[in-house]
Image 1 (cartoon, rainbow, N blue to C red):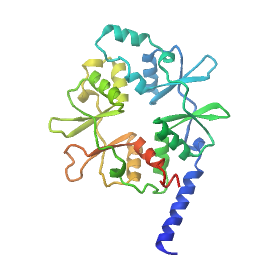
Image 2: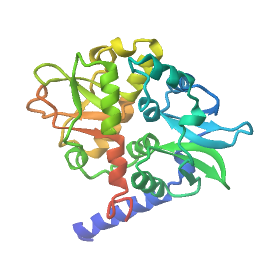
Image 3: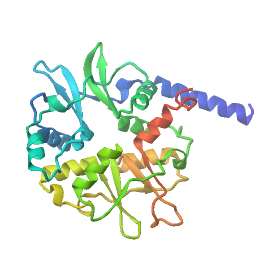
Image 4: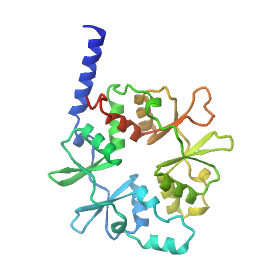
Length: 287
């Protein structure tokens, strides 16, 4: 068999392996929930305690009504200096802020269908149902973890899918300013750099929520709430990127020039970028 034919056969085997994976195999069973009357401060606490980015809002009979995400919380006025706005946010409930209806997928659908639906709807998670009844949740992180545990099917490079424009701030930027910018730019993270443009950390929506719960609020700076960046090179494979995300429990990596690692980064790659590549027409997963 010629080398070209062998490559085609290998690709087809990998495609079939991906097609055979069902949503139920990767999902997290059960849901992290709250009632409609739960205050937003309590919702934020539930997210931090359970290390989740979203909480399902249910009615008295435990039927899911909607979802509140960390991004929904950031869109509010938690870090406002206006006492009236802050009081209004404290009084608001999950039922008032939730997004409804919930994006869902059946447990016996193929994982690639879930990836495509996430990409098409720009969502990071889907409620998994069985005969219409919610039984769990599948997220981008679950799909990336599955990719990292399988054969090296990720043939692209980090440079092929990373985001080159980077939302950044200096170390002295205030938490309320960062939250406002994240919301306006629809971004899940901000790169923190020093005066020379060297990467010093990342601030995510989780960091902002933790800041709110600790009472730091407006007084906190990027330097105080950021996490150290985990870096990767543009030439690294997507498999390497997925492995690194799973190892460090990070959703995004800072892409640096290996010859100038302390220079301003060349990009950011997120777990969503990898799933987006999965859902691309003509990819290994889509056939």
